[in-house]
Image 1: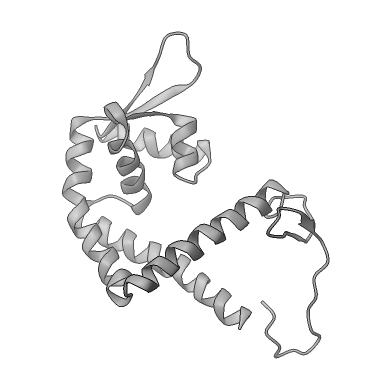
Image 2: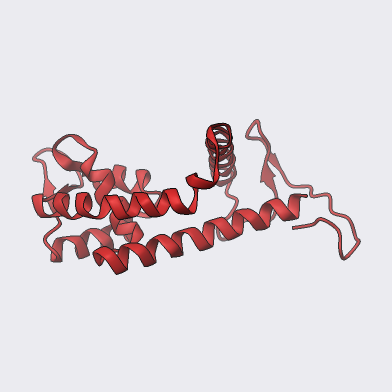
Length: 178
């Protein structure tokens, strides 16, 4: 069962972003990540956010985010601003960027509903929310313990956030191992 569940997660995390990228590029000329960054900015007061905070909210490295903000700047959809006396820069969504993201939103939302939520009832949507939040929390615990980073050995973090390095796997080739 664990292997089937993991493969479902892999299918979802690879196929869904690709489908959303395709829809957004075809209809709006932007990538899913660019749309997500502009959406995050559109939700902030003044449509602005410190780059480091935006990177955290976008689940991206500061380097990746900086490249995307540079592209959005070239297109006239964002700009960088500095505030006297503060370190770092802010990304600011321009009026043209706000128009772009609001124009892209209906097609994007239709695609998300058609690919995900139209196949779920209210209870399944609630379960998806709970599972998603639990999986993100577990991933954060693992990352905090160095899992998934170069130079770290095997192991994982349990639900209490404690590092566990012992794995139990069956030696049977067709077992339910990941």
